[in-house]
Image (cartoon, rainbow, N blue to C red):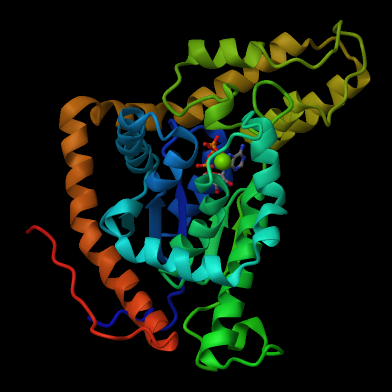
Length: 361
Ligand code: ATP
Ligand code: MG
């Protein structure tokens, strides 16, 4: 089966690691633009379940549960399995094989200098005992992406460094194995015989939503997230923890603080946002507590429909729905990735015997 991108319909790939549930950072950083892209683009959304093992090898049950929960989050926000393809990473063997190829093209020190990996090592407290597989995930991510030969990758800001590495891996492969001139423009690589397009990152409406700790990026693993399943009560409690350092209602406040990042991200009435900014900056009798409640209500309005849809997918019945989608989509995902792998192997003089994968019907 040949799977060229249909003319005029560029391909998108992005995904999530099943290390917990999805949160507001995912919504404004990536999920919203995924939902909006479904008609215009040929969309692939990947669950990076192998990558979850790079920091949690001893928690297989949690990773499996989280895998299903994230797909439920996708369905609840409006990602449509009729229009988009869901990719379960460990069911697509070509990704693991391509990871090896790219690992040979990226210098070790280049991978280890990746600023996102360094931040993650600090933020997640990985110290110097992280697994060998942990930095490998950044190389694996090149394969996740390039296996689907996409043009665009909708991501949060933290992923831009990873995408840059992926672009380097693609260029290098095309130069070393496909004879693409090192001076060629990125946009020409495929036309010049390169197996891979050089894909571009597309950062969402908010590139980096700060967590409710007011410091680090909102993250599944950092205990600073408002989840898409949280109730108004939980949202209010978490917003209440956001520390601004401001003491009284008449103290002029800093409208660039974490609280106002939330105001601008979630209060959709622009006039109200301006009014809050003016009053806050002037110290005009407006308390942090009041603003937090207003933000919490705006968040609640935004996620209430998601929560409702999510509740319909609760429990084992929902698990079955999700597994059925993943099973069906595995065939399509593999058709694309196998074709990429075959082309890459041919370019590398590794096209010995060929193969076909079979899936249970
Ligand atoms: P983990 O703590 O396990 O790294 P995470 O919360 O960072 O989890 P990922 O699965 O690593 O989530 O990221 C999935 C996608 O969501 C990526 O494109 C990432 O850039 C984006 N993203 C994650 N957190 C945020 C955030 N706080 N603001 C904007 N985008 C985000
Ligand atoms: Mg992350």
